[in-house]
Length: 82
Image 1: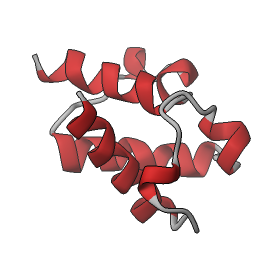
Image 2 (image 1 turned 180 degrees about the vertical axis):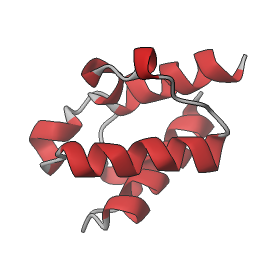
Image 3 (image 1 turned 30 degrees about the vertical axis):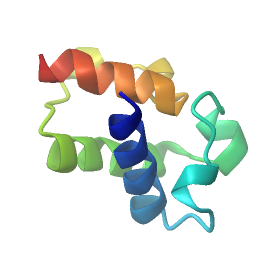
């Protein structure tokens, strides 16, 4: 799970061009509040999850809470990869 979280943090930093090191993102930090992630950035994260982790996002899967923290994203990816 820690490796998955590290990969997710790296993807977030790269895709959103954040000026922060991946390891500096706290697992439980609210990404929208801490990094100003908006709907356009969320769409970019969805594409990243699909491309980098092979998960498919259905309309029913798109819940804002899924993208709230690295922990919630990692839990979603794990659930989808089973």
